[in-house]
Length: 122
Image 1 (tube, one colour):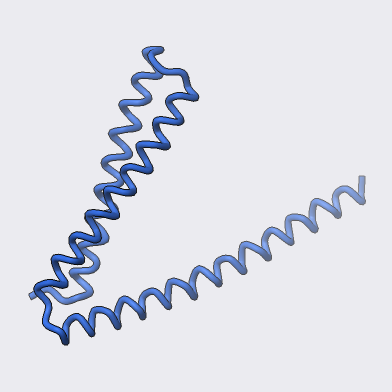
Image 2 (tube, rainbow, N blue to C red; image 1 turned 135 degrees about the vertical axis):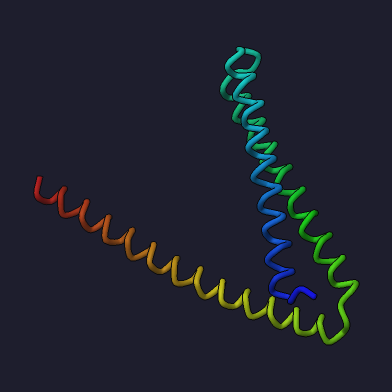
């Protein structure tokens, strides 16, 4: 039997794959219509954004359905283990996001300082 981590990984990869394929095919269709002059570039961009939103929504529904299906066949102990692992992964990701935001803020400050120094020199 697949471990909880493997199942979660498979669910995430399936969702990501679905979004990627849908967005890629949709972009091809929209680009083709723009080339043929049937759509303006702005209309194409708007349709592409709508398509991306729909693809993201569909992928979310697929992931949620897969998780729900997997949860139904788990024992109560497996569900507890799964929930604990998801909470652990979420905490790790939140910490990584916070560290990334801090690094980006420092880089932004350094860029602003360099630009200000250049202006003073001029």
